[in-house]
Length: 224
Image 1 (tube, rainbow, N blue to C red):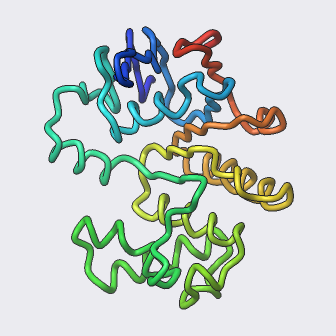
Image 2 (image 1 turned 90 degrees about the horizontal axis):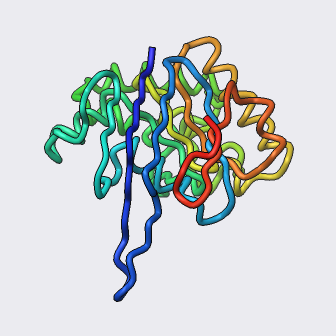
Image 3 (image 1 turned 90 degrees about the vertical axis):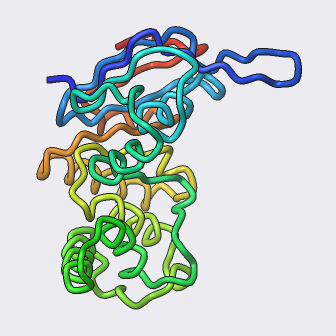
């Protein structure tokens, strides 16, 4: 069953008098429960694709279906609700709020969905236990290592039990030891919880973790 279907996707940016085709008629399918890697050279359109299918940007033209929903028909408000309900995001820069503790950072999403303080606490503690940071609840981001901060970001992405996790080069700022720890954690979460994970990577050694690799070149998929 396809959880994401994309057909003839174009994303054109206007730079001065020049049109830049970041995506150029791309079509892909991603099945429920897959751990998919998106790979390709710099400037090939990897991040642009991720931003379209994760509803952080709108394409110039083309069709995107997620969970059976034609997301191109959703209003901005509906897209926001759809993201909160179905998606989790992990970025290479962690994107943690520096003034908030580990628990508070993870609690942001359940709070946005209207969960009570008690529910937020329980959900945050449970997922931080899964990623091995239950003893770091009251720590601020600056008191954590890079690998720990990224695990907090993963816990935040997972706390609402989303259907799909989008990860944009989550190991780019980590050393090899912490990169392996993060990828092992993704694989564990994918296998145990069945969440679909779509991850951008430029490292060949990451391929062993993926069920499948989608290669992007000049805004098109060259292998599916």
